[in-house]
Image 1 (cartoon, rainbow, N blue to C red):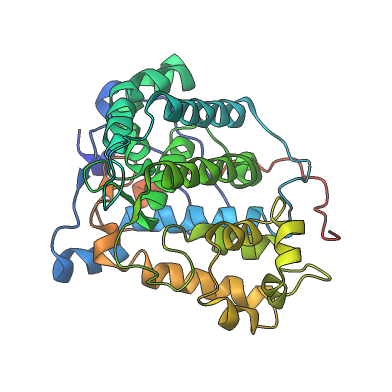
Image 2: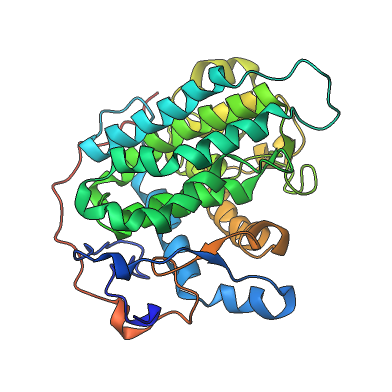
Length: 341
């Protein structure tokens, strides 16, 4: 079966609707492969590919879903969301099984390689526990996105490319129908927040090097999306303005509810905080983050060269008519988000 003919769901370019994937047999899914090998030729193609369209549409849909929402806000948590959080808890528990090696290493702790090998070895099992049996044929395609999302075992590093791999994994889970549009707020405020704490623990425990050049975005050597989605959380906050990140007490008071404040708190650096704090409104910060993500993550060869493509994130031109199906039915509205804290 040709990948172009695979009947899978699509995240439409309106960034609003997500279709439900029909049941698929084992021959529908493929082991994803690297396609961005030549910067001059492949990077421009990626920008107009169906895989890029789905990832960027998903990121923007999640950005909308957490608008003015705190981490502590009551939001629907489906069984799928709870199971993904439990999976991340399991991966967190594995860290204790692979303690750092006592011998000093200049760049990262070699025990991280053992952690990644454990993840690669057990990935199929944990995904079989996560997914219902009818979705098990997709495991061979989605597993590599998960295993690549924790860092690189050989280089002992972590960066925004690994973060991108995790988002690609979540995107694929929605395409195959395990996650749905109504899960979007919880995907960020429950799943992604839990993922961030896990990878920060990995960074601290194994002294992971930042992947790529240090501080290339002037924000964080490791993460990007907590700033993008975190600024959406704060967009219309009546009291907290961007300059608030300059106040250590605000970081202490609001880091549990707002990803942006937690991210700043976690790195203990002030590199570009002064520039960002000078922007008067979070809406401008958020729109700038989206532009910066496209330019500095999705348009940077060292970051996206390791991204994988298959039937769910296809390597072919976008807007192929066979991808677009009827949008999912509307869901019940969520409770009004809080903006007072």
